[in-house]
Image 1 (cartoon, rainbow, N blue to C red):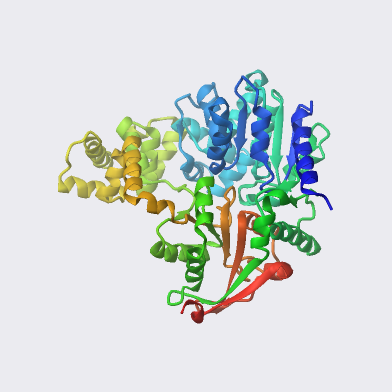
Image 2 (spheres, helix red, strand yellow):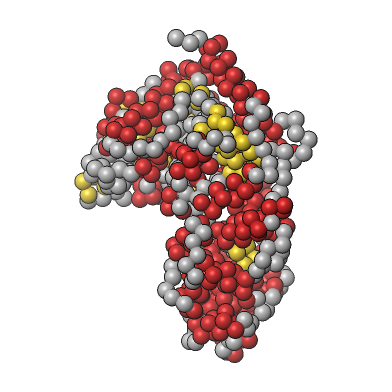
Length: 576
Protein backbone atom coordinates (compact mmCIF):
# COMPACT_ATOMS: atom_id res chain seq x y z
CA UNK A 1 0.00 0.00 0.00
CA UNK A 2 1.49 3.40 -0.97
CA UNK A 3 2.61 5.68 1.82
CA UNK A 4 1.73 9.35 2.10
CA UNK A 5 5.19 10.16 0.75
CA UNK A 6 4.53 7.93 -2.28
CA UNK A 7 1.23 9.70 -2.97
CA UNK A 8 2.76 13.14 -2.64
CA UNK A 9 5.58 12.18 -4.98
CA UNK A 10 3.17 10.72 -7.55
CA UNK A 11 0.99 13.81 -7.48
CA UNK A 12 4.03 16.04 -8.01
CA UNK A 13 5.20 13.86 -10.90
CA UNK A 14 1.78 14.12 -12.58
CA UNK A 15 1.96 17.92 -12.43
CA UNK A 16 5.58 18.02 -13.59
CA UNK A 17 4.72 15.86 -16.59
CA UNK A 18 2.22 18.50 -17.73
CA UNK A 19 4.44 21.49 -17.04
CA UNK A 20 7.59 20.04 -18.61
CA UNK A 21 6.04 18.51 -21.70
CA UNK A 22 7.10 20.19 -24.96
CA UNK A 23 3.71 19.30 -26.51
CA UNK A 24 2.01 22.32 -28.04
CA UNK A 25 -1.50 20.91 -27.62
CA UNK A 26 -2.31 19.26 -24.28
CA UNK A 27 -5.40 17.62 -22.83
CA UNK A 28 -6.19 16.83 -19.20
CA UNK A 29 -9.18 14.61 -18.46
CA UNK A 30 -9.61 14.78 -14.70
CA UNK A 31 -12.33 14.60 -12.07
CA UNK A 32 -13.48 17.31 -9.64
CA UNK A 33 -11.05 18.68 -7.06
CA UNK A 34 -7.90 17.35 -8.75
CA UNK A 35 -6.01 20.64 -8.96
CA UNK A 36 -6.85 21.99 -12.40
CA UNK A 37 -6.74 25.65 -11.30
CA UNK A 38 -3.38 25.06 -9.59
CA UNK A 39 -2.11 23.53 -12.82
CA UNK A 40 -3.22 26.58 -14.79
CA UNK A 41 -1.39 28.84 -12.40
CA UNK A 42 1.83 26.84 -12.60
CA UNK A 43 1.66 26.65 -16.38
CA UNK A 44 1.30 30.42 -16.69
CA UNK A 45 3.92 31.28 -14.05
CA UNK A 46 6.98 32.86 -15.60
CA UNK A 47 5.18 34.17 -18.69
CA UNK A 48 5.86 37.88 -18.93
CA UNK A 49 3.22 38.18 -21.66
CA UNK A 50 -0.47 37.86 -20.89
CA UNK A 51 -1.86 34.34 -21.21
CA UNK A 52 -5.54 33.54 -21.75
CA UNK A 53 -7.80 31.41 -19.52
CA UNK A 54 -11.30 30.52 -20.72
CA UNK A 55 -14.05 28.73 -18.86
CA UNK A 56 -17.67 28.03 -19.69
CA UNK A 57 -18.89 28.95 -16.20
CA UNK A 58 -19.06 32.60 -15.20
CA UNK A 59 -18.83 31.46 -11.56
CA UNK A 60 -15.33 30.13 -12.21
CA UNK A 61 -14.02 33.37 -13.68
CA UNK A 62 -13.61 34.93 -10.23
CA UNK A 63 -11.92 31.80 -8.88
CA UNK A 64 -9.46 31.72 -11.78
CA UNK A 65 -8.83 35.46 -11.56
CA UNK A 66 -8.05 35.14 -7.85
CA UNK A 67 -5.61 32.33 -8.60
CA UNK A 68 -3.97 33.76 -11.73
CA UNK A 69 -3.93 37.40 -10.66
CA UNK A 70 -4.17 40.44 -12.92
CA UNK A 71 -1.20 39.41 -15.05
CA UNK A 72 -3.33 37.25 -17.35
CA UNK A 73 -6.64 37.48 -19.21
CA UNK A 74 -9.44 35.43 -17.65
CA UNK A 75 -12.83 35.29 -19.36
CA UNK A 76 -15.97 33.29 -19.56
CA UNK A 77 -16.21 31.96 -23.09
CA UNK A 78 -19.01 34.33 -24.08
CA UNK A 79 -17.21 37.22 -22.38
CA UNK A 80 -14.16 36.58 -24.55
CA UNK A 81 -16.24 36.33 -27.72
CA UNK A 82 -17.84 39.66 -26.80
CA UNK A 83 -14.39 41.22 -26.31
CA UNK A 84 -13.31 40.06 -29.76
CA UNK A 85 -16.55 41.26 -31.34
CA UNK A 86 -16.07 44.76 -29.91
CA UNK A 87 -12.43 44.96 -30.95
CA UNK A 88 -12.47 43.74 -34.55
CA UNK A 89 -14.26 44.37 -37.81
CA UNK A 90 -17.12 41.90 -38.23
CA UNK A 91 -19.50 41.89 -41.18
CA UNK A 92 -23.03 43.00 -40.39
CA UNK A 93 -22.51 44.82 -37.08
CA UNK A 94 -20.43 47.73 -35.82
CA UNK A 95 -18.00 47.84 -32.91
CA UNK A 96 -20.71 49.60 -30.90
CA UNK A 97 -22.97 46.56 -31.32
CA UNK A 98 -25.62 46.19 -28.60
CA UNK A 99 -24.96 42.96 -26.66
CA UNK A 100 -28.42 41.79 -25.60
CA UNK A 101 -28.68 38.10 -24.53
CA UNK A 102 -32.52 37.79 -24.73
CA UNK A 103 -32.50 38.81 -28.39
CA UNK A 104 -33.15 35.22 -29.53
CA UNK A 105 -36.80 35.91 -28.65
CA UNK A 106 -36.78 38.81 -31.14
CA UNK A 107 -35.04 36.78 -33.84
CA UNK A 108 -37.64 34.01 -33.55
CA UNK A 109 -40.58 36.42 -33.85
CA UNK A 110 -38.99 38.34 -36.72
CA UNK A 111 -38.51 35.16 -38.75
CA UNK A 112 -42.05 34.09 -37.87
CA UNK A 113 -43.32 37.41 -39.26
CA UNK A 114 -41.26 37.46 -42.46
CA UNK A 115 -40.85 33.77 -43.32
CA UNK A 116 -42.28 30.92 -41.24
CA UNK A 117 -43.14 30.08 -37.60
CA UNK A 118 -39.92 29.77 -35.59
CA UNK A 119 -39.14 29.42 -31.88
CA UNK A 120 -36.13 30.29 -29.76
CA UNK A 121 -35.00 26.65 -29.66
CA UNK A 122 -34.67 26.74 -33.45
CA UNK A 123 -32.64 29.95 -33.20
CA UNK A 124 -30.20 28.38 -30.75
CA UNK A 125 -29.93 25.15 -32.73
CA UNK A 126 -29.25 26.90 -36.04
CA UNK A 127 -26.40 28.90 -34.49
CA UNK A 128 -24.66 26.32 -32.33
CA UNK A 129 -24.91 23.60 -34.98
CA UNK A 130 -24.05 26.11 -37.73
CA UNK A 131 -26.84 24.71 -39.89
CA UNK A 132 -28.10 26.93 -42.70
CA UNK A 133 -31.51 25.93 -44.06
CA UNK A 134 -31.77 29.15 -46.04
CA UNK A 135 -34.28 30.71 -43.63
CA UNK A 136 -33.39 30.64 -39.92
CA UNK A 137 -29.66 31.43 -39.99
CA UNK A 138 -30.00 34.17 -42.65
CA UNK A 139 -32.98 35.54 -40.69
CA UNK A 140 -30.90 35.74 -37.49
CA UNK A 141 -28.09 37.58 -39.23
CA UNK A 142 -30.52 39.92 -41.01
CA UNK A 143 -32.26 40.94 -37.77
CA UNK A 144 -28.99 41.23 -35.85
CA UNK A 145 -27.58 43.53 -38.50
CA UNK A 146 -30.78 45.58 -38.67
CA UNK A 147 -30.78 46.21 -34.90
CA UNK A 148 -26.96 46.23 -34.68
CA UNK A 149 -27.34 43.76 -31.82
CA UNK A 150 -26.23 40.26 -30.85
CA UNK A 151 -26.90 37.67 -28.18
CA UNK A 152 -24.62 34.99 -26.77
CA UNK A 153 -24.59 32.50 -29.63
CA UNK A 154 -24.71 34.80 -32.65
CA UNK A 155 -21.84 36.86 -31.23
CA UNK A 156 -19.73 33.68 -31.18
CA UNK A 157 -20.96 32.76 -34.67
CA UNK A 158 -20.05 36.15 -36.14
CA UNK A 159 -16.60 36.12 -34.49
CA UNK A 160 -15.91 32.55 -35.61
CA UNK A 161 -16.86 33.23 -39.22
CA UNK A 162 -14.79 36.44 -39.27
CA UNK A 163 -11.67 34.70 -37.94
CA UNK A 164 -12.24 31.64 -40.10
CA UNK A 165 -12.28 33.87 -43.17
CA UNK A 166 -9.08 35.67 -42.11
CA UNK A 167 -6.93 33.34 -39.95
CA UNK A 168 -4.24 36.00 -39.64
CA UNK A 169 -6.57 37.85 -37.27
CA UNK A 170 -6.78 34.95 -34.79
CA UNK A 171 -5.34 36.37 -31.52
CA UNK A 172 -2.06 34.89 -30.30
CA UNK A 173 -1.06 34.14 -26.72
CA UNK A 174 1.98 32.47 -25.17
CA UNK A 175 -0.47 30.04 -23.56
CA UNK A 176 -4.22 29.38 -23.68
CA UNK A 177 -5.97 27.23 -21.07
CA UNK A 178 -9.59 26.12 -21.53
CA UNK A 179 -11.57 24.67 -18.63
CA UNK A 180 -14.84 22.68 -18.59
CA UNK A 181 -14.46 21.60 -22.23
CA UNK A 182 -17.29 19.08 -21.89
CA UNK A 183 -19.72 21.99 -21.50
CA UNK A 184 -19.10 23.49 -24.95
CA UNK A 185 -21.19 22.97 -28.07
CA UNK A 186 -20.07 22.57 -31.69
CA UNK A 187 -19.91 26.31 -32.40
CA UNK A 188 -17.91 27.02 -29.25
CA UNK A 189 -15.59 24.06 -29.82
CA UNK A 190 -15.00 25.28 -33.38
CA UNK A 191 -13.84 28.68 -32.12
CA UNK A 192 -11.60 27.04 -29.48
CA UNK A 193 -9.96 24.88 -32.14
CA UNK A 194 -9.40 27.97 -34.25
CA UNK A 195 -7.74 29.75 -31.32
CA UNK A 196 -5.54 26.68 -30.78
CA UNK A 197 -4.12 27.01 -34.30
CA UNK A 198 -2.34 30.19 -33.23
CA UNK A 199 -1.31 29.49 -29.61
CA UNK A 200 -0.10 26.64 -27.36
CA UNK A 201 -3.28 25.33 -25.77
CA UNK A 202 -4.17 23.23 -22.73
CA UNK A 203 -7.72 21.89 -22.64
CA UNK A 204 -9.20 20.47 -19.45
CA UNK A 205 -12.48 18.68 -18.91
CA UNK A 206 -14.32 15.69 -17.52
CA UNK A 207 -17.02 13.83 -19.40
CA UNK A 208 -18.45 12.71 -16.04
CA UNK A 209 -19.52 16.33 -15.49
CA UNK A 210 -21.29 16.91 -18.81
CA UNK A 211 -24.55 18.64 -17.79
CA UNK A 212 -25.40 20.96 -20.66
CA UNK A 213 -26.92 18.72 -23.31
CA UNK A 214 -29.94 21.04 -23.36
CA UNK A 215 -27.74 23.73 -24.98
CA UNK A 216 -26.34 21.20 -27.45
CA UNK A 217 -23.10 20.71 -25.52
CA UNK A 218 -21.79 17.18 -25.83
CA UNK A 219 -19.30 15.02 -23.98
CA UNK A 220 -18.40 13.60 -27.40
CA UNK A 221 -16.15 16.60 -28.07
CA UNK A 222 -13.80 15.86 -25.19
CA UNK A 223 -14.02 12.13 -25.91
CA UNK A 224 -12.97 12.77 -29.50
CA UNK A 225 -10.11 14.94 -28.28
CA UNK A 226 -8.91 12.18 -25.94
CA UNK A 227 -8.09 10.00 -28.98
CA UNK A 228 -6.89 12.83 -31.22
CA UNK A 229 -3.16 12.20 -31.93
CA UNK A 230 -2.47 15.94 -32.17
CA UNK A 231 -3.23 16.29 -28.44
CA UNK A 232 -1.03 14.81 -25.71
CA UNK A 233 -3.17 13.54 -22.85
CA UNK A 234 -2.23 13.87 -19.18
CA UNK A 235 -3.80 12.82 -15.88
CA UNK A 236 -4.47 14.60 -12.59
CA UNK A 237 -5.54 11.53 -10.61
CA UNK A 238 -5.72 12.79 -7.02
CA UNK A 239 -8.73 14.61 -5.54
CA UNK A 240 -7.91 16.96 -2.67
CA UNK A 241 -11.52 18.08 -2.17
CA UNK A 242 -13.56 14.97 -1.43
CA UNK A 243 -13.28 12.38 1.33
CA UNK A 244 -12.65 8.67 0.59
CA UNK A 245 -16.33 7.70 0.80
CA UNK A 246 -17.26 10.28 -1.83
CA UNK A 247 -14.57 9.04 -4.21
CA UNK A 248 -15.87 5.50 -3.68
CA UNK A 249 -19.36 6.81 -4.39
CA UNK A 250 -18.27 8.22 -7.76
CA UNK A 251 -16.75 4.90 -8.79
CA UNK A 252 -19.80 3.00 -7.64
CA UNK A 253 -22.16 5.33 -9.55
CA UNK A 254 -20.10 4.88 -12.71
CA UNK A 255 -20.04 1.09 -12.33
CA UNK A 256 -23.79 0.82 -11.74
CA UNK A 257 -24.57 3.28 -14.54
CA UNK A 258 -22.46 1.38 -17.05
CA UNK A 259 -24.04 -1.90 -15.96
CA UNK A 260 -27.40 -0.28 -16.77
CA UNK A 261 -26.19 0.66 -20.26
CA UNK A 262 -25.34 4.29 -19.46
CA UNK A 263 -22.06 6.22 -19.90
CA UNK A 264 -21.03 3.74 -22.57
CA UNK A 265 -18.58 6.13 -24.25
CA UNK A 266 -17.05 7.31 -20.97
CA UNK A 267 -13.32 8.09 -20.87
CA UNK A 268 -11.53 5.82 -18.42
CA UNK A 269 -9.63 7.89 -15.88
CA UNK A 270 -7.95 7.54 -12.50
CA UNK A 271 -9.75 9.27 -9.66
CA UNK A 272 -8.39 8.71 -6.17
CA UNK A 273 -8.64 10.42 -2.81
CA UNK A 274 -5.49 12.28 -1.80
CA UNK A 275 -5.30 10.77 1.66
CA UNK A 276 -2.51 12.96 3.08
CA UNK A 277 -5.01 15.86 3.00
CA UNK A 278 -8.35 14.06 3.40
CA UNK A 279 -7.70 11.16 5.79
CA UNK A 280 -8.76 12.98 8.96
CA UNK A 281 -11.97 14.33 7.42
CA UNK A 282 -12.66 10.90 5.97
CA UNK A 283 -12.47 9.40 9.45
CA UNK A 284 -14.77 12.11 10.78
CA UNK A 285 -17.33 11.60 7.99
CA UNK A 286 -16.96 7.96 6.92
CA UNK A 287 -20.42 7.52 5.38
CA UNK A 288 -22.91 9.34 3.17
CA UNK A 289 -26.03 10.06 5.22
CA UNK A 290 -29.39 9.10 3.73
CA UNK A 291 -32.07 11.14 5.49
CA UNK A 292 -35.46 9.55 4.81
CA UNK A 293 -38.10 12.20 5.48
CA UNK A 294 -41.55 10.72 5.97
CA UNK A 295 -43.30 13.75 4.46
CA UNK A 296 -42.70 17.13 2.84
CA UNK A 297 -45.45 19.74 2.50
CA UNK A 298 -46.31 23.23 3.71
CA UNK A 299 -47.52 22.00 7.11
CA UNK A 300 -44.62 19.58 7.55
CA UNK A 301 -41.52 21.10 5.92
CA UNK A 302 -39.36 18.25 7.16
CA UNK A 303 -36.57 18.76 4.62
CA UNK A 304 -35.97 22.35 5.68
CA UNK A 305 -36.30 21.53 9.37
CA UNK A 306 -33.83 18.65 9.07
CA UNK A 307 -31.27 20.68 7.12
CA UNK A 308 -31.60 23.53 9.62
CA UNK A 309 -31.07 21.10 12.49
CA UNK A 310 -27.90 19.78 10.89
CA UNK A 311 -26.59 23.25 10.12
CA UNK A 312 -27.08 24.42 13.71
CA UNK A 313 -25.02 21.45 14.89
CA UNK A 314 -21.97 22.33 12.77
CA UNK A 315 -18.83 23.05 14.78
CA UNK A 316 -17.55 26.61 14.81
CA UNK A 317 -14.17 25.66 13.37
CA UNK A 318 -15.79 24.24 10.22
CA UNK A 319 -17.82 27.41 9.75
CA UNK A 320 -14.69 29.50 10.16
CA UNK A 321 -12.80 27.24 7.76
CA UNK A 322 -15.41 27.69 5.02
CA UNK A 323 -15.43 31.46 5.44
CA UNK A 324 -11.65 31.61 5.31
CA UNK A 325 -11.63 29.35 2.25
CA UNK A 326 -14.16 31.49 0.39
CA UNK A 327 -16.73 28.74 -0.16
CA UNK A 328 -20.17 28.23 1.44
CA UNK A 329 -20.42 26.23 4.62
CA UNK A 330 -23.46 24.40 3.25
CA UNK A 331 -24.73 23.78 -0.26
CA UNK A 332 -28.27 22.51 -0.81
CA UNK A 333 -28.79 20.99 -4.26
CA UNK A 334 -31.83 19.44 -5.85
CA UNK A 335 -34.68 19.59 -8.33
CA UNK A 336 -36.31 23.00 -8.13
CA UNK A 337 -39.55 21.61 -6.70
CA UNK A 338 -37.53 20.60 -3.63
CA UNK A 339 -34.82 23.27 -3.62
CA UNK A 340 -37.22 26.23 -3.60
CA UNK A 341 -39.29 25.26 -0.54
CA UNK A 342 -36.08 24.31 1.27
CA UNK A 343 -34.70 27.76 0.52
CA UNK A 344 -37.90 29.45 1.73
CA UNK A 345 -37.77 27.59 5.02
CA UNK A 346 -34.05 28.13 5.63
CA UNK A 347 -34.19 31.82 4.72
CA UNK A 348 -36.85 32.31 7.41
CA UNK A 349 -34.79 30.55 10.09
CA UNK A 350 -31.12 31.28 9.29
CA UNK A 351 -29.37 34.60 8.61
CA UNK A 352 -27.04 33.83 5.68
CA UNK A 353 -29.00 31.91 3.04
CA UNK A 354 -28.77 32.62 -0.68
CA UNK A 355 -30.72 31.11 -3.57
CA UNK A 356 -28.48 30.82 -6.62
CA UNK A 357 -30.56 30.94 -9.78
CA UNK A 358 -29.74 31.78 -13.39
CA UNK A 359 -30.15 35.29 -14.77
CA UNK A 360 -33.29 36.20 -16.65
CA UNK A 361 -33.23 35.72 -20.42
CA UNK A 362 -36.54 37.39 -21.22
CA UNK A 363 -37.31 40.73 -22.81
CA UNK A 364 -38.36 43.38 -20.26
CA UNK A 365 -39.99 46.79 -20.88
CA UNK A 366 -37.20 48.71 -19.20
CA UNK A 367 -34.74 47.19 -21.70
CA UNK A 368 -36.54 49.00 -24.49
CA UNK A 369 -36.98 52.26 -22.61
CA UNK A 370 -33.29 52.36 -21.64
CA UNK A 371 -32.30 52.27 -25.29
CA UNK A 372 -34.79 54.96 -26.25
CA UNK A 373 -33.44 57.15 -23.45
CA UNK A 374 -30.10 57.10 -25.27
CA UNK A 375 -31.51 57.28 -28.80
CA UNK A 376 -35.15 58.14 -29.50
CA UNK A 377 -34.92 56.29 -32.84
CA UNK A 378 -33.26 53.15 -31.46
CA UNK A 379 -34.37 50.28 -33.64
CA UNK A 380 -33.87 47.70 -30.91
CA UNK A 381 -35.51 49.93 -28.31
CA UNK A 382 -38.71 50.23 -30.34
CA UNK A 383 -38.59 46.57 -31.33
CA UNK A 384 -38.48 45.43 -27.68
CA UNK A 385 -41.48 47.56 -26.78
CA UNK A 386 -43.44 46.28 -29.78
CA UNK A 387 -42.65 42.71 -28.73
CA UNK A 388 -44.28 43.34 -25.36
CA UNK A 389 -47.12 45.66 -26.37
CA UNK A 390 -48.25 44.11 -29.69
CA UNK A 391 -50.24 47.20 -30.81
CA UNK A 392 -52.51 46.87 -33.87
CA UNK A 393 -50.48 46.65 -37.09
CA UNK A 394 -47.15 46.05 -35.37
CA UNK A 395 -46.24 42.93 -37.34
CA UNK A 396 -46.67 44.83 -40.59
CA UNK A 397 -44.34 47.55 -39.28
CA UNK A 398 -41.70 44.93 -38.46
CA UNK A 399 -42.09 43.24 -41.85
CA UNK A 400 -41.63 46.54 -43.69
CA UNK A 401 -38.70 47.52 -41.49
CA UNK A 402 -36.79 44.29 -42.05
CA UNK A 403 -37.54 43.86 -45.74
CA UNK A 404 -37.30 47.52 -46.79
CA UNK A 405 -34.65 48.55 -44.26
CA UNK A 406 -36.75 51.47 -43.00
CA UNK A 407 -36.44 52.77 -39.44
CA UNK A 408 -39.10 51.31 -37.15
CA UNK A 409 -39.57 54.77 -35.59
CA UNK A 410 -40.80 56.09 -38.96
CA UNK A 411 -43.41 53.33 -39.31
CA UNK A 412 -45.08 53.56 -35.91
CA UNK A 413 -48.59 54.77 -35.23
CA UNK A 414 -48.27 58.38 -34.09
CA UNK A 415 -50.30 57.97 -30.90
CA UNK A 416 -48.37 54.86 -29.85
CA UNK A 417 -45.05 56.60 -30.48
CA UNK A 418 -46.07 59.74 -28.57
CA UNK A 419 -47.26 57.72 -25.57
CA UNK A 420 -44.01 55.78 -25.31
CA UNK A 421 -41.82 58.86 -25.74
CA UNK A 422 -43.68 60.52 -22.86
CA UNK A 423 -42.56 57.61 -20.66
CA UNK A 424 -39.01 58.01 -21.97
CA UNK A 425 -38.95 61.70 -21.00
CA UNK A 426 -40.17 60.93 -17.49
CA UNK A 427 -37.43 58.32 -17.09
CA UNK A 428 -34.82 60.78 -18.31
CA UNK A 429 -35.94 63.28 -15.67
CA UNK A 430 -35.83 60.61 -12.95
CA UNK A 431 -32.28 59.64 -13.91
CA UNK A 432 -31.36 63.32 -13.94
CA UNK A 433 -32.42 63.61 -10.31
CA UNK A 434 -35.73 65.42 -10.79
CA UNK A 435 -38.65 64.50 -8.56
CA UNK A 436 -41.46 62.81 -10.48
CA UNK A 437 -45.08 63.56 -9.65
CA UNK A 438 -47.53 60.89 -8.60
CA UNK A 439 -49.22 60.82 -12.01
CA UNK A 440 -45.91 60.42 -13.79
CA UNK A 441 -44.83 57.66 -11.44
CA UNK A 442 -48.08 55.80 -12.02
CA UNK A 443 -47.55 56.02 -15.78
CA UNK A 444 -43.99 54.74 -15.52
CA UNK A 445 -44.90 51.95 -13.12
CA UNK A 446 -47.66 50.77 -15.46
CA UNK A 447 -45.36 50.93 -18.50
CA UNK A 448 -42.39 49.14 -16.93
CA UNK A 449 -44.13 46.78 -14.51
CA UNK A 450 -41.79 48.01 -11.75
CA UNK A 451 -42.62 49.68 -8.48
CA UNK A 452 -41.26 53.16 -7.85
CA UNK A 453 -38.54 51.86 -5.52
CA UNK A 454 -37.53 49.07 -7.91
CA UNK A 455 -37.42 51.55 -10.77
CA UNK A 456 -35.19 53.97 -8.88
CA UNK A 457 -32.91 51.11 -7.95
CA UNK A 458 -32.71 49.87 -11.54
CA UNK A 459 -32.08 53.31 -13.00
CA UNK A 460 -30.32 55.32 -10.36
CA UNK A 461 -27.99 53.27 -8.18
CA UNK A 462 -24.30 53.50 -8.95
CA UNK A 463 -21.66 50.92 -8.15
CA UNK A 464 -20.35 53.23 -5.43
CA UNK A 465 -23.79 53.30 -3.81
CA UNK A 466 -23.91 49.52 -3.77
CA UNK A 467 -20.41 49.24 -2.32
CA UNK A 468 -21.34 51.69 0.44
CA UNK A 469 -24.47 49.70 1.25
CA UNK A 470 -22.51 46.47 1.42
CA UNK A 471 -19.93 48.07 3.71
CA UNK A 472 -22.69 49.45 5.93
CA UNK A 473 -24.35 46.04 6.10
CA UNK A 474 -21.06 44.45 7.03
CA UNK A 475 -20.57 47.00 9.82
CA UNK A 476 -24.08 46.40 11.14
CA UNK A 477 -23.63 42.64 11.19
CA UNK A 478 -20.27 42.95 12.91
CA UNK A 479 -18.29 39.99 14.16
CA UNK A 480 -21.39 37.87 14.74
CA UNK A 481 -21.82 37.45 10.96
CA UNK A 482 -18.42 35.83 10.75
CA UNK A 483 -19.63 33.08 13.08
CA UNK A 484 -22.72 32.25 11.01
CA UNK A 485 -22.62 29.45 8.43
CA UNK A 486 -23.13 30.55 4.83
CA UNK A 487 -25.76 28.54 2.97
CA UNK A 488 -26.32 28.39 -0.79
CA UNK A 489 -29.36 26.70 -2.33
CA UNK A 490 -29.36 25.88 -6.02
CA UNK A 491 -30.55 23.50 -8.71
CA UNK A 492 -28.78 20.38 -9.93
CA UNK A 493 -27.39 22.38 -12.84
CA UNK A 494 -26.59 25.42 -10.71
CA UNK A 495 -24.29 23.35 -8.49
CA UNK A 496 -21.71 23.09 -11.27
CA UNK A 497 -18.53 24.95 -10.36
CA UNK A 498 -19.43 25.24 -6.66
CA UNK A 499 -18.09 23.49 -3.57
CA UNK A 500 -19.01 23.55 0.11
CA UNK A 501 -18.07 22.04 3.42
CA UNK A 502 -21.32 20.09 3.62
CA UNK A 503 -23.74 19.22 0.83
CA UNK A 504 -27.40 18.20 1.03
CA UNK A 505 -28.92 16.69 -2.11
CA UNK A 506 -32.67 17.05 -1.66
CA UNK A 507 -35.45 15.32 -3.58
CA UNK A 508 -33.56 12.07 -4.19
CA UNK A 509 -36.72 10.17 -5.09
CA UNK A 510 -38.24 8.43 -8.07
CA UNK A 511 -40.02 10.83 -10.48
CA UNK A 512 -37.77 13.68 -9.38
CA UNK A 513 -34.13 12.56 -9.26
CA UNK A 514 -34.09 10.64 -11.49
CA UNK A 515 -37.31 11.39 -13.34
CA UNK A 516 -37.72 7.67 -13.90
CA UNK A 517 -36.15 4.92 -11.80
CA UNK A 518 -36.39 2.53 -14.72
CA UNK A 519 -34.85 4.92 -17.23
CA UNK A 520 -32.27 7.23 -15.62
CA UNK A 521 -30.33 9.23 -18.19
CA UNK A 522 -26.65 9.97 -18.73
CA UNK A 523 -27.37 13.60 -17.81
CA UNK A 524 -28.92 12.58 -14.47
CA UNK A 525 -25.99 10.29 -13.67
CA UNK A 526 -23.61 13.18 -14.34
CA UNK A 527 -25.76 15.44 -12.15
CA UNK A 528 -25.41 12.92 -9.33
CA UNK A 529 -21.63 12.76 -9.73
CA UNK A 530 -21.42 16.55 -9.71
CA UNK A 531 -23.64 16.77 -6.62
CA UNK A 532 -21.58 14.23 -4.67
CA UNK A 533 -18.29 15.90 -5.52
CA UNK A 534 -19.29 19.40 -4.40
CA UNK A 535 -18.68 18.29 -0.77
CA UNK A 536 -15.40 18.82 1.03
CA UNK A 537 -16.52 17.06 4.21
CA UNK A 538 -19.95 15.39 4.16
CA UNK A 539 -22.74 14.69 1.72
CA UNK A 540 -26.32 13.89 2.71
CA UNK A 541 -28.98 12.50 0.38
CA UNK A 542 -32.52 13.52 1.39
CA UNK A 543 -35.51 11.50 0.19
CA UNK A 544 -39.23 11.91 0.90
CA UNK A 545 -41.88 9.24 1.42
CA UNK A 546 -44.82 11.54 0.72
CA UNK A 547 -44.52 14.79 -1.24
CA UNK A 548 -47.74 16.75 -0.82
CA UNK A 549 -50.34 14.07 -1.37
CA UNK A 550 -48.12 11.92 -3.59
CA UNK A 551 -46.41 8.75 -2.40
CA UNK A 552 -42.86 8.50 -3.70
CA UNK A 553 -40.50 5.55 -4.05
CA UNK A 554 -36.85 5.81 -3.16
CA UNK A 555 -34.53 6.89 -5.97
CA UNK A 556 -32.66 4.10 -7.74
CA UNK A 557 -29.55 6.15 -6.94
CA UNK A 558 -29.92 5.29 -3.25
CA UNK A 559 -29.80 1.59 -4.13
CA UNK A 560 -26.68 2.14 -6.21
CA UNK A 561 -24.99 3.79 -3.23
CA UNK A 562 -26.48 1.55 -0.52
CA UNK A 563 -23.19 0.08 0.85
CA UNK A 564 -21.86 3.60 1.41
CA UNK A 565 -24.96 5.00 3.14
CA UNK A 566 -26.04 5.30 6.73
CA UNK A 567 -29.80 5.81 7.00
CA UNK A 568 -31.73 8.05 9.39
CA UNK A 569 -35.51 8.43 9.64
CA UNK A 570 -36.82 11.99 9.78
CA UNK A 571 -40.35 12.41 11.15
CA UNK A 572 -42.14 14.68 13.60
CA UNK A 573 -40.33 13.09 16.54
CA UNK A 574 -36.99 14.23 15.08
CA UNK A 575 -37.72 17.84 16.04
CA UNK A 576 -39.07 17.46 19.57
